[in-house]
Image (cartoon, rainbow, N blue to C red; front, top):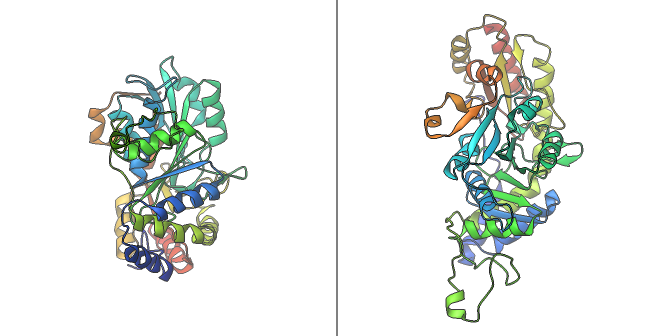
Length: 388
């Protein structure tokens, strides 16, 4: 395809890391994962990084950890404020743990949660706020974290699409009590599959470590606040204290992640160069609504919404893109309210969600990759200019 949605960012370094790990004979979670966790936490200036097998699992064990805190744990029936647009696994762990969703519309220009609706979303049962920075563009994380602090809410930052973005000189994925990342093939770094939870909270870090590996104490130090070790070593070696999962990462993924993390600054720089070109070509054309950058985007992709005030046929646009060999897809997962899965949720909508519906019905995105895409972006501009 002339213009792909995603492309591999691997080189000889990642392949060598895989060979090195295979030769070691240790394939499940071990020294490579621990080194990657340490290096990842250092890159973001956080105390703890806990790797799991996907960004979705990072959300799952992050939500789960809040239910097992010693003081003020979440409980079934509590409410969580969420944006109307994200990937499905932002929402699914909330449903699986019995939380009620308070769904808030997004801003049409940023595609992130409309923070002017937060007070309206708040009820006496609200205990959690979930922020999502859509496709590399930072949400109003400063406003969101202040709101969460003021009202005593837990704050989860789902940063799976926006690694290396910045707001006010601070990396996204560092504002929450818990912060999640994804290392899927198309994301800012790729470890085949993989994810990470970042936190500065010792108890939450241990809860996540325990939940990712069967609810087992093996990854916890004897000083952990989660349990009191006993003298019986035979039993202690296989002691379960939480109803956990097996969402551990492979050692191969940890080894690849270390190489990818070293490349991240240059890859982000290349994405931002492409982003500047895209903004220059599309930013002043009233037919197309593109994301208003908040802070410094790490530009996962380029979103386009066909202006609802103009009579533009999206189906015809899609046909033209297909003929031009240009890949495209729905924005993130679209508006969650449009999906069949909502029949399984306990939720309410805060007012109306016209912007999320407009993005769902009239929007799409094309890919960005960490290398020069000038020919692809210029062809995209030419094709859309003549088809709209």
